[in-house]
Image (cartoon, rainbow, N blue to C red; front, side, top):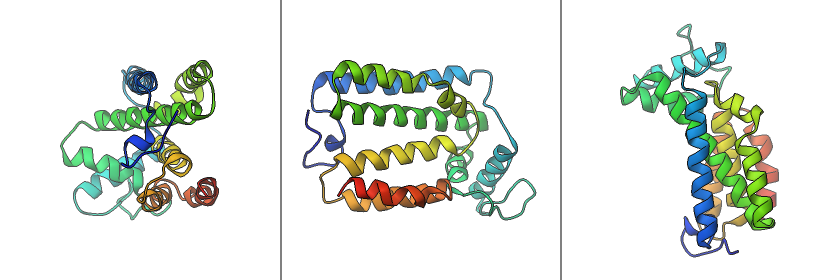
Length: 200
């Protein structure tokens, strides 16, 4: 199977029809699973209140303010920035939070499939990707309004780009993804060096 090409999107996708259909199926199926898991509403914690407050503040041009209306410095502004998009569009907050988690879960599963498809047999790829899509620990993360789902999605995207992308835009894209890792969680830069090393 070939992952390389001359344009950005095809180099990140399987070149065979079966691979592309399975990738699409896994990504859509995972997103739907997350929607069903959050059917009664997404879970909140103290972190969640800060993230949503910061997102609403950003959408009003005030910057990331926590639930006490103070500048949020303990937590990163990346996740609130995503929430701010939904707030700016006047979408229900719960809808925005679930949509973010569904998209992120889809990306995590899709990237898992891509890495496995490149290195293992199709049967192994399907079984292992199914395990990731149905993993209870990940599903729990996807039912909470936390920054972990977007952080994992960006992390997996960075791994796929570093390993398989052969394009002049590769390093510019990695720089953007590494920056996003930092803004999603402060621990992000710890992962940047080993991911970059994988692509050398």
